[in-house]
Image 1: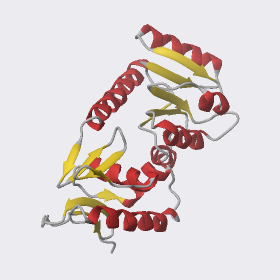
Image 2: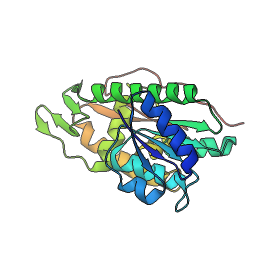
Image 3: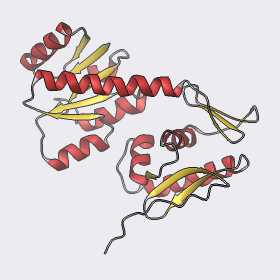
Length: 233
């Protein structure tokens, strides 16, 4: 497995790279955001958020938007708001310095395992009524005929499909599709869902709104009630 280690501190980077190589990983090193974003494709990124040339949060979003590579944020920022911001930027895990090598290796193994399982899942065609979705190939067909979806429409559909019929929070969809936590993206999501509904409706598939929460993908004849959602006050 190939790991990109993004760390500007040479002492820390040398220690981490040595430990990873001793455990069988092929390690590439980048000391700044520019080199990280220019690096060849890898299986996982260990990303220090305190980079000298750019905010690591922005780098995380760009890495995930580019090829969906798993990212573990490695940082001294341990406050809860920082952890939440890092995870919402697309990081698969968040490790606070100082940390033990054994813990980091365990987290790497867990993230890589989830990533491999997801890739295996994505190679299998998924059938919903007369609709066939191939996530790995990014194709959707209705009775063998292509259903033309825009990139964002497909990305939204993929998030909902992977949820297996469960309701997905709006905020999660926005982070996964746009790598953003900006509140103004909510209206953009609604517009894309509306057009996606029109294209899937002919196949008997509905993108159902879960009021005050998000969306879920269901068959038109599905009468299962939506899960209860918290109500303010």
